[in-house]
Image (cartoon, helix red, strand yellow):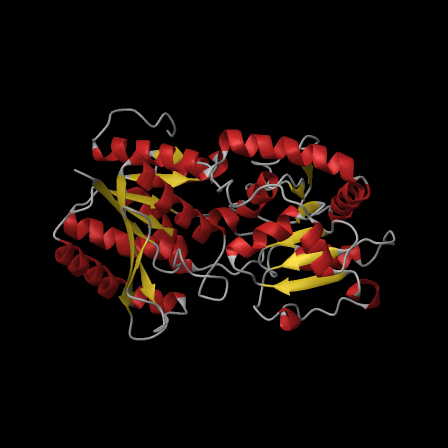
Length: 400
């Protein structure tokens, strides 16, 4: 009999593109996990919301997988709307389970909004429940950041009531363990797909961009990740002839992707491509001299791992999700998150010395292939599922 796992990813459709709802590292991880864990013998159901009537109700997802989109009366855009719909969504999940005539061995929720719904489903059905917070608010919030009181109240409750919690790095595991000392916590690093992100000939992309050499690149959201300050710092320094930067992320319309006035010194030096479908990012990333990751707080770091898998070194801030995957001096460089001047020193030096950049990139690529593939992530989670459900004893080898 095929063992089945039900993933709740209500706010992020694993098959959505950059212009279809919330997108980021979490969405990519769930897509990889839901696909690769089928190779471990697990059937996969993913429940998300059908927040666009053009999307199909169901999508096939691998030989043992399916994505189902639950109906909502109106688009859920605020925290208050999500919480008001919590019980109704949980009832939809339970009714959907009845139509399937089979009970999953385990329920796995992603992010606190889905976790709040999963908590109700767990209470009403008794299905073992694993929760992945994907960055706790208490951990990522910095002085001056807006903080949700309801999220602060709900997240610790979810961790205490779940049968297990899965996080990406040890620092976050410590935070979870303090909030819920009786809940098992497992650490499973993100995994990327090396058949999608790998070293390639940069020629076609450089020709398309009108460049003669590899650019420095940034991939991610445009606000709240340190990019504005990094660009401001870049604009204060003299740049070598031929230096160019490419930014991927933000609005789908590249012409309106960035409202900031870069100033005359950078307007001809920075190209904004806007948002791209995930697979379309890969050839651009492989054409980079290096990736910058000026994050000012914890991140999942999927773009960092994808750059390393593409044999591209990373220059980033010393924050969780960057420092966990980059070995400074070997496959990139780490700097204090406030020292953006040093970040550019390293990035421009790698741009100016392509052979050194390639050597560091290949070191990172080898590391990713050893430790951070989607296949490895799926194997570790399959072991956790077996342990939490009682289908296997002490097989995970991670956690508290």
